Image (tube, rainbow, N blue to C red; front, top):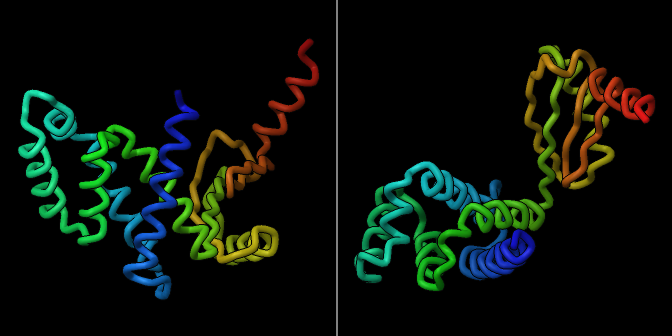
Amino acid sequence: MAKKSGKLASRYARAFLASVEKELGTSGSPTPAQQAADELKQFSSVWEKDQELSSVLLSPMFAREQRITALESVVKEAGLSEITRKFLKVVFQRDRISALPEIAEAFSVVADKAASVVRVTVSTSREIDKVEAQGIEKAVAGKVGGSPEFTWNVDPKLLGGLVIEYAGQIFDGSLSGQLGKIEKELTP
C-alpha cells in the first residue's frame, strides 16, 4: 500500500510542479515551486495535527460542497496562494486529501530538484564553531552538486563525529555509528 501511495504522491507532485512552472515560471530564490512547497507543507502540517479539520473534510456526514467550502475557508485563513488553493481543491475533489502529507513531501523534493537545491542535514555530537561548519559545508558542497542548503543539528547521542544526510543517503561518521558497525561484525 505504501508503494501505491508513493506513486500517487509522485504523480500529483509532478503535475503540480508543471502547473506552478507554467503559471508562475521558474525564476527567483526561492522559486515559485519552492514557495508553493512551503505552503503545501504548512497546510499538510495543519492537516496532520488538527484532527477536527481532517475529520470534517473526510466525513461523509457533510455534503461535498460543505466540505469544499470548509477547505477553502481554512486555506484562505492560512493565506495560501491561489495556485496552492486550486491544487488542494483538486486533491480534495479527487478524494486524495488523505494522501496530502505524502504529496507535500514528494512535491517538496521535486520543487527542490527543479531548483537544483540539495537539502543537507548535518548532525554533530556537539556545537561546532562557524569556521569548522564552513569547512564541512565546503567539503560536502563539492560532493553533492547543485546548491546545497544546510540544516545543522546537535545530537549528543552520537558521542563524537557527525552524520550527513542528503538525497536519501546517510553518511555516518559518528562514534556511535562506528561502534554499532563493530558490534554487528562481532555478533554472530
